[in-house]
Length: 264
Image 1 (cartoon, helix red, strand yellow):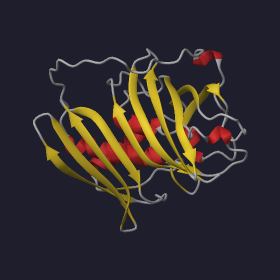
Image 2 (spheres, rainbow, N blue to C red; image 1 turned 90 degrees about the vertical axis):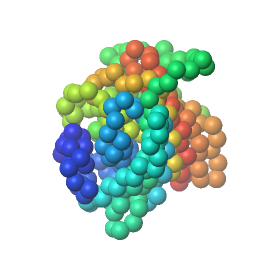
Image 3 (cartoon, one colour; image 1 turned 135 degrees about the vertical axis):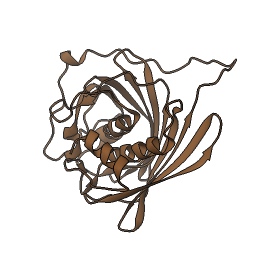
Image 4 (cartoon, rainbow, N blue to C red; image 1 turned 180 degrees about the horizontal axis):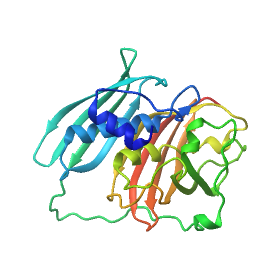
């Protein structure tokens, strides 16, 4: 089942099947869960004039490769902003929650342009796409990831964090216009910023995720995007990090902040 087919199924029914190929260990990759909930939110808002402003996701429990139910509730619908809550259910329990705010642009005297500039990286053609390690999560095969700065995961680096390029794997995903639901699926694919410090393979997973949508997407699924992560703090089994995503034209698309559970 392609992402397009999955999103169409969400439009047609409250219950949907999780497609194969998205396992992250023994559970479903959180980015796919977030993307499914975002698609449900878009359908609930159903207003092309209101674009995504920000969204927060809490991964309550593990999602298995089995049918799930998606429910949506409009919490408030104002003149400028609509806020919606989406819940993903499995085994009669809420496993993930998304709250998103959509709004129309308004006139304002306030304008601040201090967004983080995209790093200068070699072009993807000059670098090597990371190979899918046999011990890496199954879902990593869905994306092409290129490390341009920093170390690979589990290399015992003394420093965290990295930057690079990403796109949907052209062999697995047909090329089409990218949506904000696709963005949620893609953005979380990079491992946590502390993973290069791991000396051996060990679990790490997103607990909470907040995303601010800055400039509208103008990309296809197979276009390259730039990514850079920075870890603020990591200790006692948790880390806090933020990341930025730019398109190939160096337009800032989104800013992410995550709390990550670390089992190393």
